[in-house]
Length: 250
Image (cartoon, rainbow, N blue to C red; front, side, top):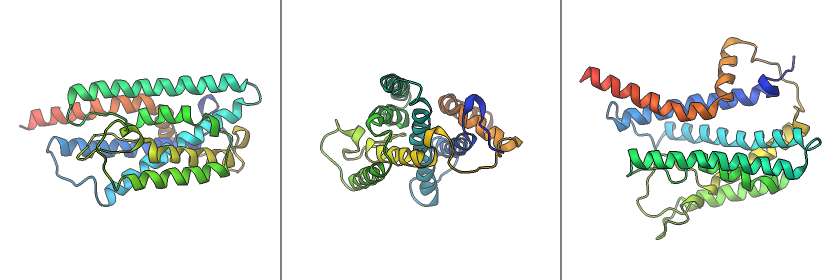
């Protein structure tokens, strides 16, 4: 049986996004435990660091896939100019949420506050993706090129800081959340290419048995459908729980 989730959403997209959100929460939980010296774990090297990068990559690829599905569903019934306006509004909304995180993180942890985190990046990428939304092969080439440039930039530091959003890092720069456009816009382009291949007209081109009718996948899909509020709420909950634990065990 092939069906869609709530509001016509494709269940497998929500499921994969839900898995990515769960893994992100796990990573942040371990990060917070390290920050408050509850445990000592090297987060930025080894298998855990690779797992975090893969999780982020899946999440950002799904941004591109979802943009493609949304566009392909609307292109035959909605003016292209209206779709572009919707994309711009969505991008500005997410970028605005990112700015809110910038302000809060600057107040709470000024030495590591977020300048260009995942919400900033996704917001800008949504707007930048508009000219590329119908492309497949070219997006594979451009996406790979942008990713290669972004990974190469990590080998260098620069004496200026005004291009931090692009991936040009000054010496000794560190922040708790950093997703520069190079390479992550390339990852979005790969997602758009995948979406155009796998979901022409916003529908699957393959058969997939619906697993979301089962309890556990349905819960994971629910998390995927509500990724934005969960993203905002999970850190205050995690940090609050850790502080309570430290208070009652000190």
